Image (cartoon, rainbow, N blue to C red; front, side):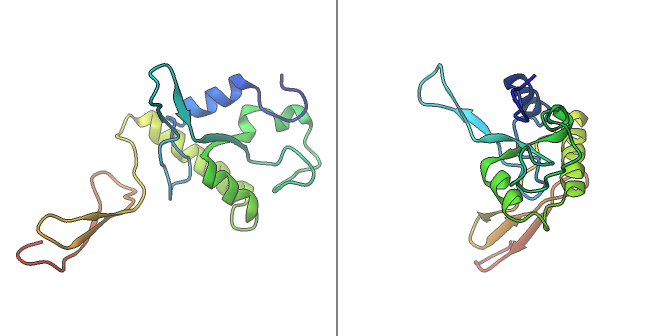
Length: 153
């Protein structure tokens, strides 16, 4: 068990693996680990974030929870560092119920064996124009294409 309300290393590693080493925020889903230039190293850009805060002065703190419950894996969600910071800076936008839903839906998606999700990003379309890859909740690929070049889009 961790000292106080912090997650153990094992809990952090398990959260990362359960999330497929990807951010659990459905609007992000970016990979949270990758290769380092040195073969025996990897880069970690993920965090085991508390759903209900570890400490009194933090977002979503629940005074009725014990430190044991605060450090339990059920109170953790795997996020990229940017999203972990966002959820703590805007508690009203990211309530406990939303984070629990993100975690469940993301883990269910990972467990389904489908290809990794990708968040919205702008891409260049062949022969000119701009295409945006958008999140798609169903099976298949979702694309929105804005064509400003010559010829077919």
